[in-house]
Image (cartoon, rainbow over all chains, first blue to last red):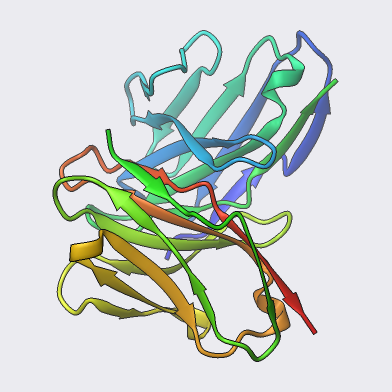
Length: 114
Length: 114
């Protein structure tokens, strides 16, 4: 399975600022996704990161708040913009190495907004 | 809309005892089914998956799960729990042809008493 590295692993940010989270995979993958896990909650899909084009966002998530880039098949970034305390969550990058393969996750970025 | 239900939010078992974590899904067709485990401060690790075929699936760390179509269930089992199994367990489903997106249950927190 792919090895997924996420940076930073955790951060404490001030309200109104933005944070960019990086996801690096050690091999080319067909699909990359970003999930959010709010405290004590399950995982919610934010968007599918599409290589070379705009991400596909799920209901309730918008590009202005969560801009995503995916310049190639091994790297993606998620930015959490204009943060508020409600954005305090774990953000997880996940990948599929091929169609029909299981989803694999990075260790996540634990974000606290004060 | 598809949904995944994990009825037990918390479960406590004694080390060496058997374990069963319940998962039910609501969807017309048979989806792909997964169990993930999340240890504190970690990302999600895939325990096992069901795509088709034999309804009893073996996974890592001695876990197994059984798909029962008639009950729309995919319960996770382990004959003898170890203290290191204490973690949060998530059931997830993927609609075939549904854009490769997973829907997660709310999770079951497992505590193991020594």
